[in-house]
Image (tube, rainbow, N blue to C red; front, side):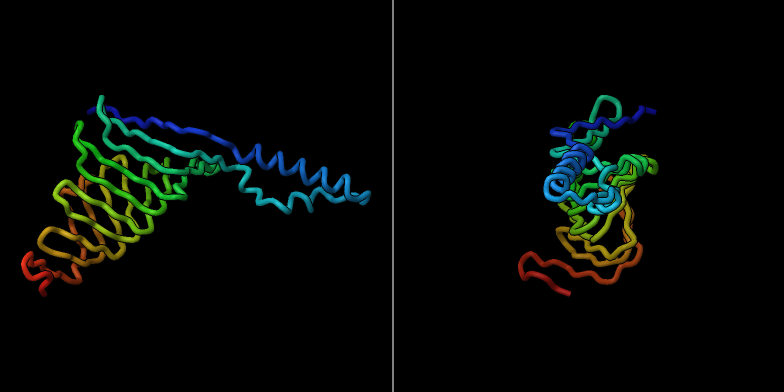
Length: 202
């Protein structure tokens, strides 16, 4: 079996730790020059959310997940936050785009407004206007979708809508391969047929 590995590329990596140190010096200088009264260090620290000291921010990020010599998936995001004390948790705070490939052919696309990567479990949980499309022009929409990088599966327990050239299918729960070619809707709640000549029909 071919070994999979993840490459991480980032541009303009900037640590919020440096920013906090700078702001800390600014506040210290302000209190020193504006008053002779000693300000307790605890009050200065209270001005900051200390968890931010454990966050690194990267702009214009690309992850390439490879299998053998070919890319299997490429994840891009305008901004990523890395939580250094949370098992290298990654947060795609401004959304993400995932393109899945078979050899050199793109087979499906996933995009969402927000995402979180759990490196320990090899999961990416996408949420907010989740949109997935395959090579057959079928579209799945939901508010949440989990991608298991290791097993190459995607799923959700939430409400979903699948648009095909012939039907619009509403349901609860969804399971599929990451290429979105074979999928299962756990509970179908409604089907609307599409008539190319007369529009929709029940």
